[in-house]
Image 1: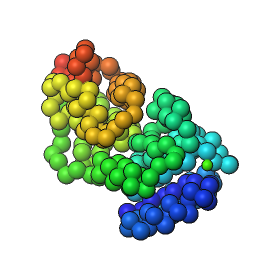
Image 2: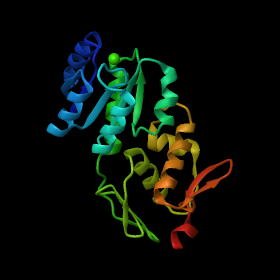
Image 3: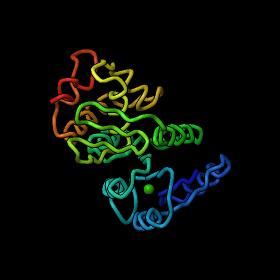
Image 4: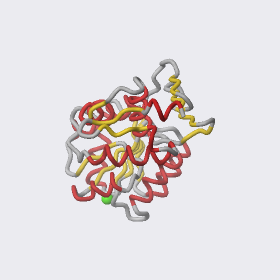
Length: 223
Ligand code: CA
């Protein structure tokens, strides 16, 4: 598995590269945001580890730019826990985050988790009215127009589309789409639901079941 590490602090990067390589990852390391974008265009990566504090570019802008160019899973590395709200709140398109200092074992587990979720799942297509979720190609089409989703948004929609009309509880969604060990703010789910509704163009696609969770709207699907 190929990891693109974007980290300007050598004291962190050097042992991290060594540790990840020991775990069997192929690591490409950049210490500048500009280099990271060039590397991204240059060769495919399976996951991007992105430090938000970089000398040449704003980490938030870089994260958005990476997401605009690629569906590669992004794990944001932040120096402070209070940045986490911004990470999820700004809809940067990141899949997960770790707060420094973090352990190698924790990081490896998160890399494996996001790349597992990003893998193509060979399942049959879903037809829910005019909403089409193709798990094989990870494409979503509404009324014949393709909708560009982040990996998380796709996973969330694909879960709801497994059983249109069935209610999925908030914790169940967090467990299946994020991670059973997700200890982040649950408002992350609301943020993703909100952006998914906007992108699908009609809030009725995803119905809120008050006090329980969400479901793919069957009525909305038939409109
Ligand atoms: Ca830094």
